[in-house]
Length: 433
Ligand code: FES
Ligand SMILES: [Fe+2]
Image (cartoon, rainbow, N blue to C red; front, side, top):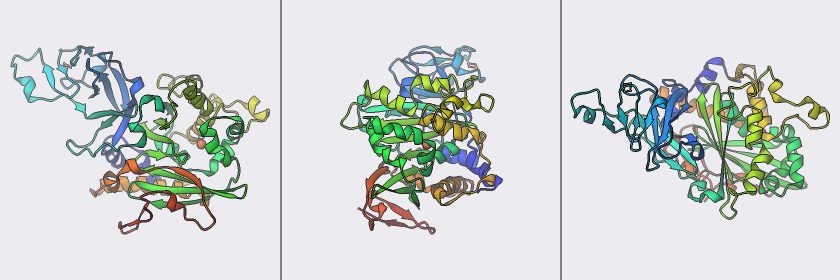
């Protein structure tokens, strides 16, 4: 349970809010590479942390992120002309390169005027099928974490995006809440028995033991949490990493997620699957995987979970019953939703766009949820109180998720290299290799 004040502190990410300012200190996904305009294509508006920006690629393919409003008198850069080496605002013709260099200011007589000003652009990098942006104070950008999937060729990676019309925290909560899988996703998990997908093999055991033992440890990057299930005489530990401010390394070991606020009532849920050996990014593996979890384009559109359908009548709402199929449910399906992605989204969206956590009654299965709240609140308070953000210094790219059988006396922490517990006093202890 959280009081309303802390709930606000944890969920609001607009400019000037403590958590919003904290998030702006990290590199954040702004759009998938596949959704970017092509080289010298038309600019496109995106929303991030409640602010609007325009993304564009110049003729050399370099990505750029512009504040939506033109530097001169704030006409939208979405209207701008793509002119190869820069975007030209159609109002008075000021032209900007992707790095913010002002190339022309035709309504200013002084030819040197443009040398004294800089366009409103932000640092961007492109890696792992994602365009990343840094929106924080100038010259204070941390290094971009080198996640495992960034080193692989495109064919070894699947990128997918789902738009969820709920505050980003409740979507992360769903990703650090192992006990719901056995219940909410029971019909989907039953399908893993007949699927040849690696994903199915890695998740199938979660059909059993709906009361896994949950433990969580704070780390320098966020926290680790484990769900230990007893199934078929085995003890299976699933360790998930939450990496501040909005990343999750799933216990399957090959799924990474970013949950990025579009605004306080909507978020972009980025998924990356990867496999160093298999070409999972190619057909038919790619489509099979996406269809299995409900991240294929037709299913996402059916529920209004794409950028162009999230404001349409298809979007999950009380009015359309969140898209639930009661006929299918009465016929035996546990929930009446197409797949895992829709089941999770329905539970997130149905709580209201910002869940009122003063109404919750948490139980031992929710230890990781409480840890998430503490982690986000500590980020918000650190910035509010002008203290350092420890997660900024963490080597986040090394945080992994992992799932393995462990013996009755084994400590799950041994599964996670570089596991470090951060004590209340802030000192760290190395727990394993
Ligand atoms: S508003 Fe863009 S050039 Fe004047
Ligand atoms: Fe789920």
